[in-house]
Structures are given as C-alpha cells and as structure tokens.
Amino acid sequence: MFRFALISALAALFIMPLTSRTLAAGDVTKPIEVEWQHGGPFGTFDRAAVQRGLQVYRDVCSGCHGLKYIAFRNLLEIGLSEDQAKIIAAEYTVIDGPDDEGEMFERPGKLFDYMPEPFDNEKAARASNNGAFPPDLSLIVKARKGGENYIYSILVGYMEPPDGVTLAEGMAYNPYFPNHQIAMGPPIDDEAVEYVDGTKNTKEQIARDVVNFLAWTAEPSLEARKRMGVKVILFLIVLTVVLYGVKRKVWAKMH
Ligand code: HEC
View 1 (tube, rainbow, N blue to C red):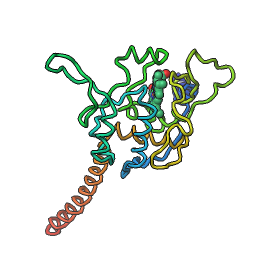
View 2 (tube, rainbow, N blue to C red; view 1 turned 30 degrees about the vertical axis):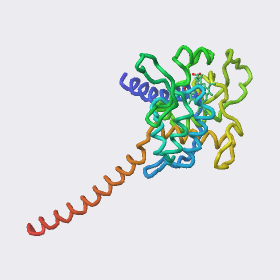
View 3 (tube, rainbow, N blue to C red; view 1 turned 60 degrees about the vertical axis):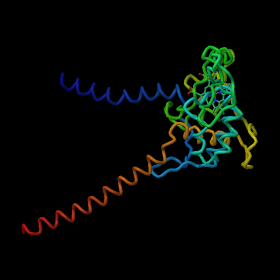
C-alpha cells in the first residue's frame, strides 16, 4: 500500500510539469529574445533609440494609443532640449478651462501638459477599433509578461494564419498574442517612418526603437535605480572589509 502511494506520488511529480508545459506551449509562442542596452545590472537607455521611438510613437501609435503618464516636460529626460519639447507640445491641442465665462477652451499644449488621449472615451476607442480597446502604452512594458521582448515580438510577429485557422472578422494573426488573434492590424512595416537622423527604417529597427521608448515611459527612473544598486553594493563591500579589519583587531588581543 505504502509502495503504491509512493510510486503514484512520484509519477504525479513527473507527469504534472510535462502536461502543464505542453498545455502552455500550445497557447503562446515564446517571445523573440532581443539584447536591450538598458538590460542587466548596469544598463542605461540608448538615448538615440529612445528618441527615434518617440518619433515612431508620434507618427504611428498615437493615433490609437495614449501615453497618459508622460508629460511633455518629461521629454527633457531623454535628451530633448526645452525648445524641442515645447515645439512638440505645441503640435497637440489640449482642452483647458473653465475660463471666466465658465467655458472650456482649446489651446496648444505646453510643457506641463500630459500627452492628450487619442479618443474622447473608451466607447469611442472601441467603436473605431472593431470593439477592441487599444490600451494606454505608458506602462505596457511592465504590464505584460515578457516585457520588451513580448512587445517587440507582437510588433514584428504578424503572419498569414496557418492552414485550418479561420480569423474572426477584422482580426489579424499573431502567434505571440494570447489565442493568436489580435484586433490590431500590423501597425508597422518597412519604411513606416522616415527617421530624421537617417537611421535605416526597417520594420525590426522601428519596432526596436519604439520598444526602447516604451521601456523608458514604463520606468523613467531605471538608470537612477541601477546606479543606486551599484552604490549600495560598493558600500557593502567597503563595509565588509572595514568590519573584517575591526574584527581581527579586537580578537588579536584575545589570543
Ligand atoms: C489603428 C489603431 C492602432 C494603431 C495605429 C496601433 N495600435 Fe496597438 N492596438 C490597437 C488595438 C485595437 C489593440 C487591442 C488588440 C486586442 O486586444 O486584440 C492594440 C494592442 C496593442 C498592444 C497590447 C498587446 C497586448 O498584449 O494586449 C500593444 C503593446 C500595442 N498595441 C502596441 C502598439 C504600438 C507600439 C503601436 C505603434 C507602432 C501601435 N500599437 C499602433 C490598435 C492600434
């Protein structure tokens, strides 16, 4: 009896991970692995890529996706001058007010404004997108399992549906998206943007740049956090050496 229980327990231990893994594998495709300059313990943002990514966001994604946690003044942190950020802000129209008559009014954006939403409300957004809601992208890199690699894979991973798969109306096939049917058509292709710095505008380059930008919007303080980590470790190493010296000195008298 005991032996039987032991054998079934062992068998269960072996079989369980196997089945759960096969189930999971059928559902999502593992994201493409990309080297990110801001990855690892010492990583810093690739400023040029983040700035190009801002251009991709503005030229392509901002038609459907908001960035509600980013203010125009934050763009100074990625290396834009105050004048450049002011010019970008002024290209947007924001609603302000009420004025002395109690009316809301429109004015050009200023540095302290946040990026305006592309749609007036969620219902309007869904109505323009086949019933699906384009999520705000400010925190999307942190909000999705797989982070940067996942978002990159979604952007470059569109393909023809395999034989036997029928797409629902208005959906596109993307193996990296859960259930493989996504309500966002392929947003970028080769030459989808014309880079001002002359970088070659392949689909992969554009995707990498916009993901670099979205990694920054999701954690603008990443560099400060990593610098602090390095300082703390250095401090702990020095402290260890000092305490070791003290310990030897104190115990020397004991022998
Ligand atoms: C024409 C509108 C449109 C444009 C332009 C667009 N998207 Fe989307 N996007 C959508 C919609 C709609 C969804 C929701 C898809 C769904 O839930 O099936 C979505 C979803 C997403 C998601 C979320 C995927 C997930 O896991 O939920 C990401 C990330 C994304 N878009 C990034 C981008 C980026 C980056 C760009 C610019 C390069 C962009 N989108 C351009 C409409 C758009």
